[in-house]
Length: 529
Image (tube, rainbow, N blue to C red; front, side):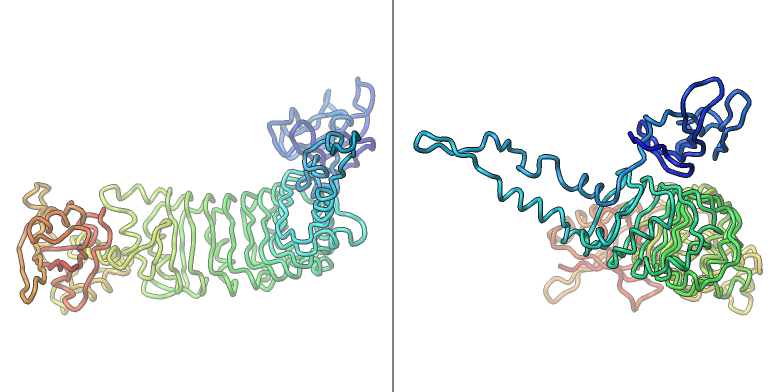
């Protein structure tokens, strides 16, 4: 509780919830003073600031407001007080031991023992000289401390979490940060801030800041842009679950050092808004999960080109959007530097239930090294690309594709839908007629005829076998043990393809089936140990 009445704009804590004071005074038909509070948690409130038809204050939603008595409102504590409360236990002076019970007996007398050691430890802790990471989330911090108290207390602090506290302005955050010259990571999520009058004047407080978490603060993009001069050297910027719905054209020099931008959980629906970030000179990772994007589109080049947007982008996350077409994946292939993508929980993923979505994505994006949080190995890529050629071979033929190079003229529509198909056929060869026929699902027709070779002494033993494509490598090793008497634990299996005879691929995952590695009729499996 507090002895002083909060001011309008102050942040208060009451019964486990945080809100902003929007009104201080009397309420008609009641006695005494009330605080009109707009709660962060909309379910905590009861109305929109109206009582008996009279509007006392405005709220962020129709049900986030209520009145509370001042005695039930906690206005907060200072930064140093929070440090002491978080890191120094109440019984730290004596280490949890009652000093009144500490004594020695001698010559018939009891002599009290002073806990000198424990007190000296607490004295050292109170300086926090070695503290590099301060976690003060939900500690009711509402202000800094006067003078240079903070800088003397935590001179080496590099990471600070002030999320979900009662600081009500970014100016106050800057006053705290000004005393933390080694601060590299700052978390100020789940707060409600008033904007500074002159963000540029606060720049000196954050010169060494490299990573900023500004999640759940209800900011729009314009508000983020307005505050950006405060953080001139930030490299990783997290502004998740805010009110960012549109992104205007902005001065990219304000974010010239940003290499990771996290916009998860906003409401961006237009890809053209995202393209504004495509001019950031150092951006390598872009997180757009849980927005409302319906497509990805780079109109500056056709399906054969590489876009000028996002020149250094290596990773893009698009999970849980509304991407409805595989064309969005085709567009990602236009990114020059893309190595990692996440596209799970989008509508287009449900369109190819008869195929492996992951394999199609790997085949469509040539430089991809990680797909949906897992590494895309060389073997997996080869298998995915070979399957892709076969899967869409009929469409290729129907569009004008042909084994004869002079007659091979697939339509622009096909090449737009499958921009890597021509490249893949140049690498592996065009699909033969027999590969385009509908395959029977019977066991006999799904068998793959392979040559299994094993060097035994001065001779090479070769066995031809027809194996089901569903057989995993572990079972294959068991079969080889029976046929060639090679210990399972010692076996190292590789294979060569009839189409790429000069390359050798390792069968390096015992749980994967033969079909995963793209093994075909006539391929050779080598047994080594």
